[in-house]
Image (cartoon, rainbow, N blue to C red; front, side, top):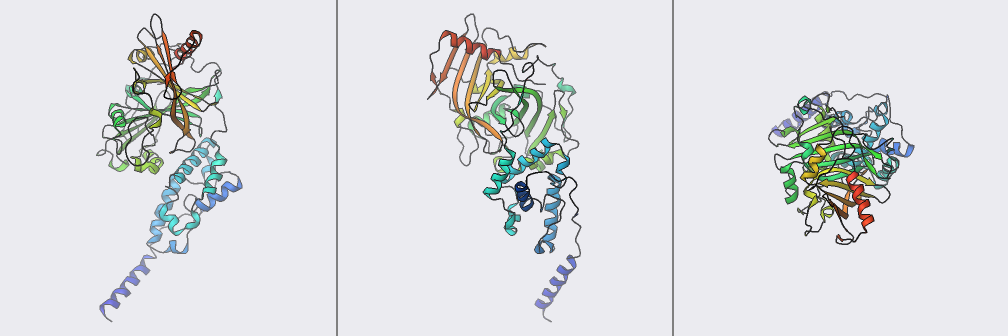
Length: 445
């Protein structure tokens, strides 16, 4: 027997021996399967259950080691992330959130795994399948609750940030996040929330230059979420504070979590979200589809136009360059959505106005703005968020309204094509000034 034949025989014997090294993949009936219409179940069964259920479904070629080891690793990891066999035991909101995330994974090409569909073509999600899932979820079909008394009963007692526990991965809350600059807003129809995305100075400067691929070290992003509340004015306002999420860029410190430190604090007492440090897997897993955008879903509002794929929301920053004041560099006070016209607006203020917001006392619904305060209400048309099915973000600006507080407060409105100055009657100017000044700041810890 020559050396080549011996080599082939040895390899065959080795492969045969490896077939007995087969750790189990649990196979058991569903205990609380998610309840969905039959057409939705067929899509999930065909494209998701092979990995995301307790049913062991392997093709003959998946049974061969070493392919079996790879399949087993992927299946166990998938089940830990999302298991349709047990998802039905979770609250309805949690079930819907899981489906929305799954749809966005599909839309952005992350799931099913490309290497899986390469050898299991039947698992591919067609455009018709995706439409079936999206139609079932119908993110804009439910309206937010109307406020019983008012959007805010008064300013809440401020939390002591020194008493806030760090997340379970060690990331502390940044007590300065409320003073960061706004870079976008999101109207989330999938869970009836409004979100404001803020950036610290390093991150904000990076958005202005388009230097966000990757984001520079030291960048800090905060995403603040509120429940939507329908006001008596027919507008959707930020209601009860839900949470703040932080992303802190430090590539050398967070090599195992995509270069970012992750944290989430819920409720006005800012309780850490995680049960242990493993919560970070939920963060990195959710952000996996935007890994090519340095794991950031947000399209910052900026005039910068970095090359390549859509990284920023350039259209929403299309304010005239000759404005005497540039409100997109100011701090945010609140936001709202007009569901009738699919418009979104953000109220920002200069330093004097923001100081008045910080000085609000218990029982106050809106600040008393002193002379020198300037408010700007920027209103945009909405468009679907290309990164998140169920979300809407600002599109082209429709108007910018300025209110300058003084002995004789003034109002100025820019609107229409090119955002040109609009003539307004005294009565209309007073009505709009009263509306803008009375907007309650969004509730913060």
